[in-house]
Image (tube, rainbow, N blue to C red; front, top):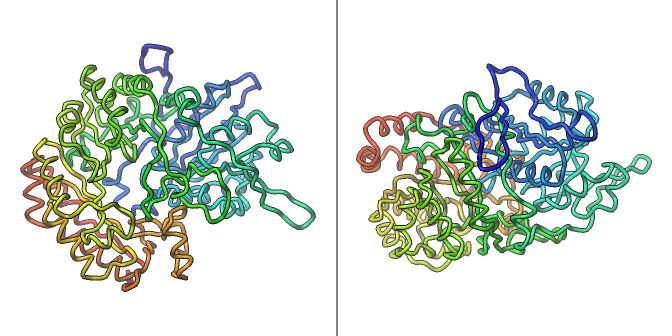
Length: 540
C-alpha cells in the first residue's frame, strides 16, 4: 500500500477498496491503539443540497493534516478519518473509530470557507452523539473556528467532553501527554466539564498561546498527506472547485489545498477567520481582536509542494487569506514554482487594493491561473461600512481589466445583505457583477457568523440569528441570512438566489465561458444552473 519514495521517508497511504473497512492508524509504544484520531465529519448533504453530488468541492481536511503531523512530530501515534471524502455513514464512521481504539477522538472543524467551522458542526454533533450511543469510552474533543468563537456552547453538548481553544496546537500536545482525566485541570487552552453532585460546570482554563512566527516550521512541521484515504492514487477522493478546473469535471482530481501563511491583518466585520488566534476567553472577543499573520518559510512551502507534485497533484489551492500581500513571502514561493516546474494549476485570494500589476506576470508563470477578489458590494458606502477599505468602483474595474490582460481568470466574491443594504444597493452589486462579467462569481447571502464582529452587532440589535447550524450554511435548505436595516432575511435570500441565476444564465457570461474554456464547459455550467436550491425560508 505504498505510493512513492520522496526525498525522505517512505509515505504510506490509506487505500479504500470498494468500500471495505480499514483503519488509518500508526501503532505506538503504548500498545495497539493510537493516541489521537482526527475526524473530519460529513456535513455536505445538509450544507450544499444536491450540489454536493457533483458540483461542490471536496477539500482535504487542512487542519486535521496540520495537527496530525504536529502531534506525530512529538512522538504520538495518530490517524485521520475523513468521513466527508469517503462519504461514510454514521454507522461506518463509528465502526472505523471503534476499530482504531484511539485514546482521544478529535473533531476538527475548520474549513477554507469562513462559515465552514460552524456548518461542520452539523455532522460533528451527529457523529459525536453516535459515538456516545455506541458506548465508546474515548473522550470526544472539539477544535475549530466555531469552537473558538463559542467555546461554552460547544462544551455544553453532552457528547462533547473537551474543547481546544484557538488553533489548539500546544493544548493538544499537553493534553496527549496527560491522562486525559484529572490532569486536564492544569492544561492551558482547553475546556472541560466538572461534575459536582447533580450540577455540571463548564470550565475554560487559561488560554494557551498560538504557534509564534519563530516556531511555525518547528511546531507545525508539515501536512500528514500519507494519512488520507484514496481509491486508486493519493488525493483522488478530493476534487477541486468546478471552476478551478476550467469547468471540466475530468480535471478536478487529484486535488490539494495548502496554507503558506495563517491569519489576516485586516478586520472585515463579516469575517471570523482570525477567531482561531484568540488568546482571551472573554465573551466579547471577536475576530477583529486577533488580527495578524504568521508565515511558514519558503523552504517549508517548497517541501510540501514537492510532495504534492510527486503525488501527481496538478490542481492546487493556496488557501491563505492574503497570499497576494507580502512580497517578501510570496515572491520566493512563486519563483520556486517557476524553477521547479511543478505544473500546478493554482488559485489564491487577493484584496482589490493589494493587487500589484507588476507581480501578475510572475503569478501567471508560476501557475496561478485564478485570483479570487473580495469585491463584496457594488455600493461604496455599504462596502465602507463593513470595513472593506476605501477602494472605489473605478479601481475595481481597472484592477479586473489588468488581471484579465495578464491572462489570469477572476473569481469575484459578492455578498448580499449587509446592514445598510436595500433592494437598490443589492441591485447595484448585481449590476456591477454583470458588468465585470468575470470567469466566476461567488454570491453569498450575508451571515452573522459566530466569531465575527457582525455576530455581536446582530446580538446587540436584537436581530434573529439562525436557529440551527444548517441556518449558517449559505446554500442549505435551512439557510437564514441576516436581516438588514431595510430588508427581511427572506428578501435578502430571494434576491441572492435570483441574482445567482441571472449571472450564470446571462448569455454574455456563457459566451465568455465558451470562449475561455470551450463548448463542453459551457454546457457543464448550463447543467449546474438547472439545479435549483430549495429554501425553507422562501416556502419551498
